[in-house]
Length: 229
Picture 1 (cartoon, rainbow, N blue to C red):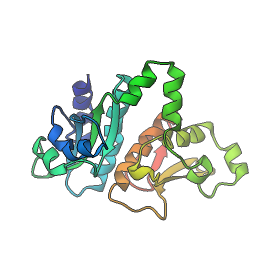
Picture 2 (picture 1 turned 90 degrees about the horizontal axis):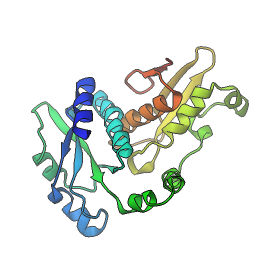
Picture 3 (picture 1 turned 180 degrees about the vertical axis):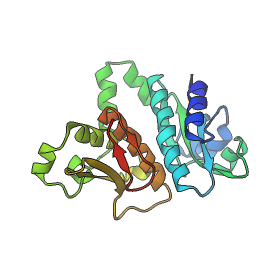
Picture 4 (picture 1 turned 90 degrees about the vertical axis):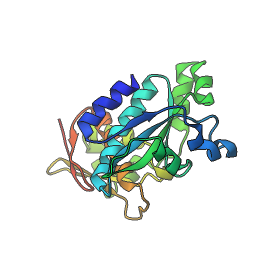
């Protein structure tokens, strides 16, 4: 199921996402330190070299694999520094004009299995509360309380979904803006945002917003608009 999903998303995205299995050497140090336990499988997030749009697309489309894996009952985690990227690349198929952006661990985390063995509400609560989050008001800076109260439902639902999205070090660097005159929604980096994975975070946040909003299409790039369906 995952391989079929990945194949379809590669066709849509122009990326080179890959399911890599049974490679414990990639996570040897992280497993030994206790950061992971028995990690050995991952999604290789591979795309065009030196491409901001490629990294944004990677966040958007690879997060769809994360959500699909979650529906299959698996656990996942985006990986940037807590693995051996050189060893990971050796297990991948990477063309000369491509690079390995990031990885996504995939497996059956013990805490997920514990919650799955109890009520669904327990799992939902654990997923909802497992990381701190900024508020909707902070995610849409510049809007007054009255403007937020009168904002369209899809905007608030989209932002709330985006705030559930993973981001590097859980920094949540994406901010949204809404123009009530034109109805345009845009996604940009917070002024203080830094790091190597901002475009990846942008793609992930855009996907979550799109799902929460109930449809629509983003244009690529920072500050690009969301086209409401």
